[in-house]
Length: 61
Image (cartoon, rainbow, N blue to C red; front, top):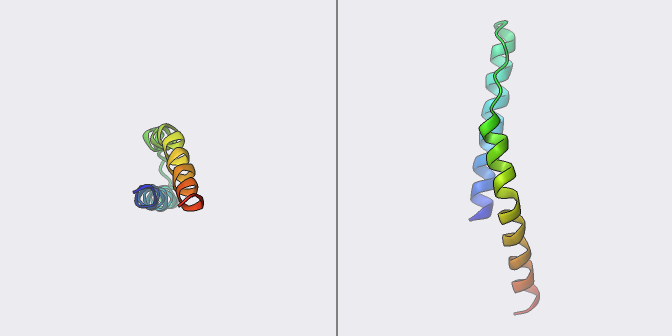
């Protein structure tokens, strides 16, 4: 589950980078996406916990 979510966040980052490149190419102001950063920051502790639990489970089964 965490891996799929991380993939989606990475895909969103790629799209944002492409949008920003197009905005720069057309001379527009580059857009910022504060909700993406906020989502990553809010999910970071849960992703870390999930990763640690999965690692613990692998080592102790």
